[in-house]
Image 1 (cartoon, helix red, strand yellow):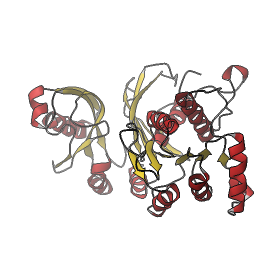
Image 2 (spheres, helix red, strand yellow):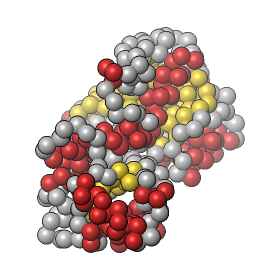
Image 3 (cartoon, one colour):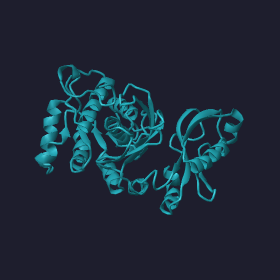
Image 4 (spheres, rainbow, N blue to C red):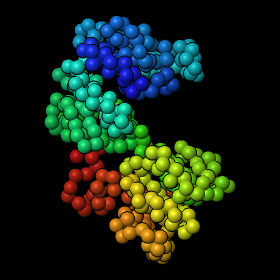
Amino acid sequence: MREVMDELLTWWKAGDTVGVGTVIATWRSAPRPAGASMLVGPDGTAVGSVSGGCVEGAVYEEAVSAVESGEVTLRRYGVSDDDAFAVGLTCGGILDVYVEPVSRESFPELAEVAASIASGEPVAVVSCVAGPQDRIGKRLVLWTDRTSGSLGLERLDEAVAGDVRGLLAAGRTATVHYGHDGERRGDDLTLFVASYAPPARMVVFGAIDFAAAVARVGAFLGYRVTVCDARPVFATPKRFPEADEVIADWPHRYLQAEVDAGRIDERTVLCVLTHDPKFDVPVLELALQLPVAYVGAMGSRRTHEDRLERLKEAGVGEKELDRLASPIGLDLGARTPEETAISIAAEIIAGRWGGSGERLAEGGGPIHTGAAR
């Protein structure tokens, strides 16, 4: 909906009802990703696209009908190979499109959602697109610190809020399923989660084997991964295929440039794997001053003690040093780069959500929030 928000908000503010079709799921080479939207305005104007032209006509008619009837619909469309080829694809696909009437009455939070998107504040809109008739069309809006609206049951809202904030933290849009009362293993309800936030960043300093494994796990967790090393011969995309970008630059210089450009925020995680003082001390001196989610540094305990002394000599205070996860990762007994990457990821996840890192079998609190209770 992001790409059509300006037009939608204009009609919404004028008190008009707009037909909105949104792709909520795709299979094969569907022309548009989940979250793509098309509007039909009060004057019949179509804005946006759900299929690059293949099924726009059918969705247009559904949107007009939704405005007239006030009803929502969920339709599955198959894109033929010929139609797919016409819009630049090599084969056809399948897409589910949810069509609804949007107005001040049906979506009172729209202006606040639009403001959050414009300012870069993460926000997620959860819509019930399939299930019992009394739940379809209900909506819950979530920010990192508050919610608005309801899916019809407090227990369901609570379960969804916990899970969706995980999707929002990763900037992921998805379709999820719940039981009637919020059971996470149920499938009575189909909810579409539209997350409006860029993926959180993971910056890995040091182009070594461990960095390749950390980049792979970071990408799996939904981070936008950057690998940075001052040595061009090692900092190559071929060595780090899972990274979104590979940068040949001095770590502290690159990090400062990203800070100055506004591309480092409170969700960013920084993994310093260089364990070479000429690289890691300057970048850690800067990193520990930043309001990021995590700063970790690799090295032996002896390296860690030497690094602390060097950072103190550089003027880094105790409060900042307490933020440093070093030696990096949790004690999983890891031996390989891949196992070490898992231990680092586990520490990052525990820090994000306040986990203890202890075995669940030995605790008494809630378990995986996104799984069964």
